[in-house]
Length: 635
Image (cartoon, rainbow, N blue to C red):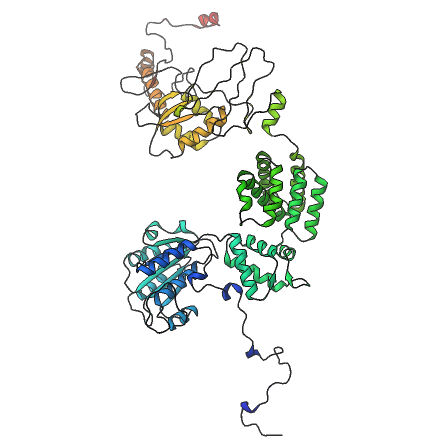
């Protein structure tokens, strides 16, 4: 045997090693697609054209802000954008003489170190785990020193909304006036939790969700670069499941590649649907057609087929819910059938299905599926709950809409569907109809009142598509309007109408009001919508600057005070008070007042407060006392 002086003299391994067919040092660790294909330049960011355009212009003109706030849902590129900004600020070019640029070279020491996450002047902090004021003080102290290697120190704080209130306060001064060699980049998914004082000191960019079409195209390019064949249907399913997040989609694509393809080598849409626990898209369309045709046996068989393939019952209902939404959009905006954002199945088969359905039918299906998804989540047997939802949908498919039902009951001819902003009038002629009167609404619009016909066997009804057959009677006073709002259980609006609104003019269907500052801004719009739905008339709410009447609550307080004052000044009450020292007048009851403790007839005294003109009748001072016999005779 030959002598071996060193390890270099050892012969190469002739067989499989301890860790596999190749020596361990020859294998590089696998990097997931989300890391391997992370963008390193602005050109590689997808779906963020507006932000890229602004940042490019800022670098070209030298107007780069000192602080950035990047916000958006997970996986849209917030941290990636922050690192690209750091490279753009510190790139020195291939020759080492370059300056800040929107197109970093990627080969200079700064670019290489930043891409490898080892640059000493680019520091990242996860605010989800370091939330205290001491962590922020470390950053503040670090800003006092100049960069060691780079041109600019860049501090990247991810999930900045997790910082405590004291940490935000400690950061404010440095954020407002940082040293010239410091840039701050914040990233957050919860912009509403960031204090306004911090937002006002940053240049904010909203990273939008990436569309399904862009995601599918991007995933297709990555699959081609990985030399993996993926069917277009599979890419569409992954893009839709990603919900606008590039990182989520790449993780799903990584999982699909690991799952492998069919015998032909391509990853099919069925395989991805099984991986995601989804029903096949064709099955969802078949199920929708069976439901809308009222065929429960076929619908249950399709659900069984989806269950055998591994689809979850709750996800099947969610797929139906998404399909109803797509069909409603196609019905409302037919031009969407040519949109590239819709998959091929929705553009072809979805359009054919949308043409056979109406908006009221789709609306009812949406409401029932929305409630059905909640029932499935709460039920002990998810599949049984889903089957019950499908059965209800089948038997609801052939039910008439409320408008059709009213027309059948009244025997009236179908009428054109009216706009929701001009609700139809539901008029029931009385036995002795009064003379018709005209009523005008604000803005020149007129509301017609149905005139009674000479021979009427049934009420005359002119319904909307979803009109209420028996609307509330027309209010004759502002107090009746407030009472109607209380009956509709709109508690918040009812409270504001009592305490925060001054009536200027009441001429139904026009109401002129002066709301107080604490009243909500949408008070007029909410009141208009509620009155229109409840009465069937179009109302006009006018916001005025005139003083108007006191609020109903102020009138109530004044009325109570007036009744107590009048009762206290009555000679009989004074005599009782004198006879019983220490007695107090607790309450004055008036059976003639309404629920607001106001008299139906009101008058305006000199002080502007509205007081009731009728008070309880007290015995006159010279009245003779009545004995029990007189009382019995009166009874």
